[in-house]
Length: 112
Picture 1 (cartoon, rainbow, N blue to C red):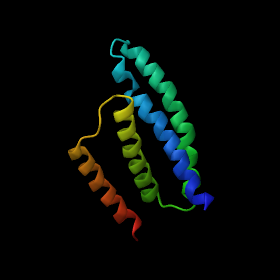
Picture 2 (tube, rainbow, N blue to C red):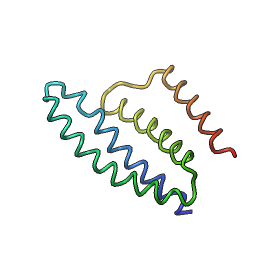
Picture 3 (tube, helix red, strand yellow):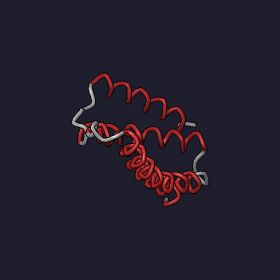
Picture 4 (cartoon, helix red, strand yellow):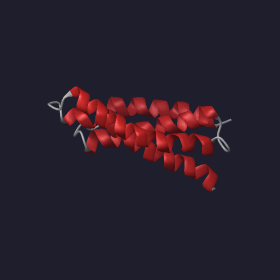
């Protein structure tokens, strides 16, 4: 069971870093762009330190397409929470429907 869950946990943590790296600065628009890029690059380093092992370990139990699908679904979940709680921009019903359609596509990846 750990072989199946470890990659998901690592991908979740990596997505927390990457989502932060991409979007944290939207609340700090006065911060110079080069400073934002430097900070974001530093955050992305930790994302890579988690994502690479997640994919390496995960490849023993998941296909590459399944790993990518897991990563994308996690990204949407993490982004929705980050958007609502950090940016104060709740996900609209249309966005939720769009995310649900993406999740339906993920179901096809895993069904066989």
